[in-house]
Length: 206
Image 1 (cartoon, rainbow, N blue to C red):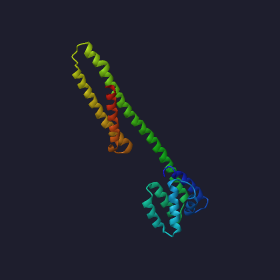
Image 2 (cartoon, rainbow, N blue to C red):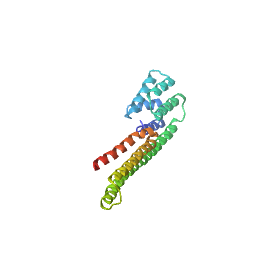
Image 3 (cartoon, one colour):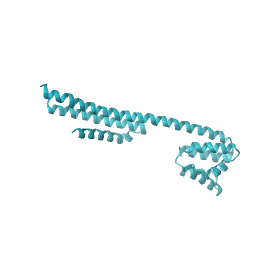
Image 4 (cartoon, rainbow, N blue to C red):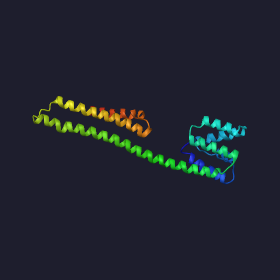
C-alpha cells in the first residue's frame, strides 16, 4: 500500500480535477492495478452501489484497511463525495506528504543499516585484536622469556576478553534493536547472532 499510494493519489487528483466526482474517479481507477489498493477501491464502489451509507462504508473500511494513511484517503474521498469541497488540493498535499515521508524513511533506513554494520564491524575487530594480542604477543613472550605468564594466566586473560566480548555483544544487540525497531527486545536476535559469531571465531581458531 505504501508503494502504490502516491501513484494512486496522483491519478486520483488528475481525474477529480478533470471533473469527476471522487466516487466516479474510484470507479474508473478500480479497473487499473494498484496492488492491494485496487481491491479496496472495488470494495468501496461495490458497497456504494449496494446502497450503503457513507458512514457505514467507513466502518467497513476501518475493519478492513490496516494502513492508516490509506484509510484516511478513502475516508477523505467519502467525505468529499458527501459534502463536497476542494478534495483535489487536499489529495495533492497528502500525496506530497507521503512522498516526502517515504524519502525520509529511506534515508533513515540507510543510516540504520550503517549503524548496524558499524556495530558488527567493531565487535569483529575486537575479536581479531584480542585474539591477535594473545596468540602473537603474550604466548611467545611467555615461552621465550621467563616473565611469569603461564598458560593458566593466558587462559584467564582469554576468558576475561571473551566475557568482555559477550557483554558488548549483548549490549550492542539491544542497542541495535532500540535503534532499528524502537524496542530493546527486538535486538535479542542481534545479540544472539553476535554471540554466535564470537563462538564460531573462537572454535575456528581452536
